[in-house]
Length: 361
Image (cartoon, rainbow, N blue to C red; front, side, top):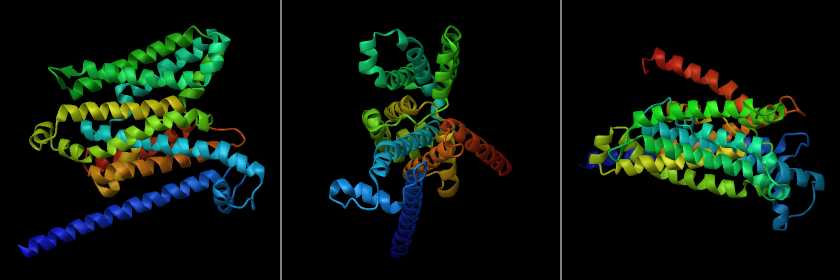
């Protein structure tokens, strides 16, 4: 008996050590990516200057940096980096949660129509907002596009969820098929709206749909970050339920998991996180699909470590992608969605070939 208890304690200690090492490593990666992104750009800011500027409002000395450097850091770099960290974290944990819920590694938030729902409402606002009274546009113009995109993603998610209901239970196959149908319908409606409008709206929508973090400001992102942070934090609490669902819905029910409530909650939380992200920065693909695969390949499928690790790696990778997007062809800027697709798609093909070679697919 004593041998069994000792063996259990050793395994638990090894597991805790592994978790601490993985999370510490990813935390260091995120910190490095953040400092690199904040310091690099048209105005270079050293690490010493970053800390001096951050400590200045708390009573630090005003030495070692200029007023211009302080303005660039507070008003341009930091809002953009904070936004990329939150959006990367939201897309990655939503992808990891939905893959665990559907027990399908090819699932990503866009599959159930979240991104296209947001895009449809965004193009409607882009096309028709010019017909609004000037006073109304001046009062709500900044928030109209992200708020509408968020409502669009939420409406589409609820619609897909309602279609998938069968005798009070959620049919996962129906949910995915509903998502495919809604994606096709919203894509057609987007094309129809663009067909009847001018080239200006087409260019604006095309740039928005490729992803853009350039409009980040404290005023614009304040409330949206709040909407993103709450679902991200709540999703991490469902690691045990997702592990149980990996055994099958009936087995999870026998383990005391309220399967329908878990499905509904995870789908809604994922839609909130992704919808707010799309509303703030447009469509950014492959983060929600690739990041959970990268984490799973290193640490295994357990959601206790997979979910927080996805948050950290998703935030770090999107921050580095944004750094590449705004520095590769400076002073111009490449849409961040192009960077994530160009780097994520080849890596995902490599993962598919590797899985095929190992007969994992």
